[in-house]
Length: 332
Image (cartoon, one colour):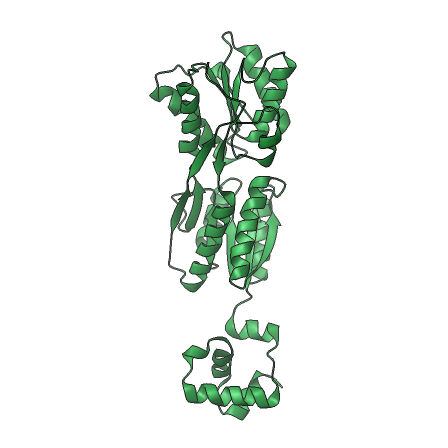
């Protein structure tokens, strides 16, 4: 027994049977009743694959993220999967390592799987990726990066404003010599935004921009250690505060400063970014910028569901932030 047999017995088309089984409100009462009677009498159960082919849905959403070994992306993915599962969707999760070639191959894989939608957190937005995204027929949501040349719904984080706010937090505490340990813009687009927030905060408050106070590396703990070593060995007047562009960089910086006999925050205040779970339990606990990454995943999932239903919708959502003040910072 298949859908063709049911249609023949009920004297309707196969598409009518499909609508009765999936969207019964779209079928008039008489036809709906005829189909349901045949279904009951024959005990017909639709084959899952055949159903997908008829209604052209797989109930699959592809999710591409640059890494999965941090609290940030774990929270994002958890928010995505929760909201999607509530709406009957399953997730194919792919890690790109922020590599353009891997990202493009993931898009090709997801198209072969005929996913209903894609949520993409880019490592860096290249020309090839931008062209692919703008021509892809599949509903697609961008996470973390609002590129004006991409015509897609976006869920982004206010990297610039939050970074400026944490530097101004230092300034209110009386700090004037403030260093920045960041991420090379070639490694991630957030690196440039967080650095710009830092430099603009100094300019806004008429504080000098000392190039010796700036170090840009990678996401790793070691980069925070090397960044603090670079800044404090190179500068003549030592910073009294350090803004690290991630909590991992902050932890690395603190390890270096403590190895030099400096106390945190008595000698140097240090703040991070992302409010990772480890930051609460590290000694000293780390002042950090907090985004609700779980909620951003929920919003991205809701956007992709909306785009599946209405592809022309383009929405923008910027996540708010909090400064979580802990033991690693204090007034001068």
